[in-house]
Image (cartoon, rainbow, N blue to C red):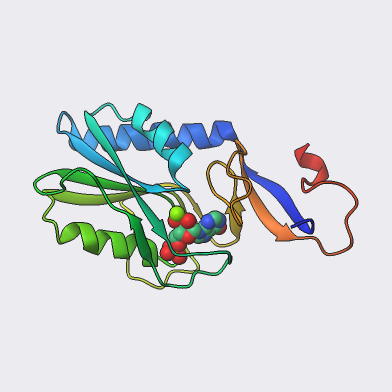
Length: 189
Ligand code: IMP
Ligand code: MG
């Protein structure tokens, strides 16, 4: 942990602008139709809170808790549903809201689960789309920010449950030589 370095990738202002754009896109697609927004805990909690306020269409909110990572930066590919929805999905327009699409295993698992409950429609929205690690054949319908690779923390995203409260997004990497200061690189202070 003490060897981790954080390099700022996207500022809170940039993130906020992307979320406003996503809200407009979703509003354009659904108009006055009601959407059941399904937030994936825990990583999407801040993104979800900002996105719901950016969508002009009427929304219902609900949450699932999925776990796929454990304490590693590599996806295990094994997904577990730890908390299910309280709303019924049947006949509703559903949009899954997740923090990051990486291998795609998590989103594909949830998509299949919800599709079997016969929604009127089902789409997906992610804050970050990490293109390089994709294993499952799944793409998100709405994407905030695309990047190739790297492990990202902050704005709800964690590494071993740390850094979720940082307002900006950071790239996490290991310090090469023995460090002296804190986890932030000089330019990020
Ligand atoms: P996937 O199943 O490999 O697509 O992984 C998706 C989940 O893994 C996300 O919802 C995150 O919770 C977690 N994850 C993947 N990449 C990162 C990252 O760079 N930072 C933090 N969490 C990540
Ligand atoms: Mg997640």
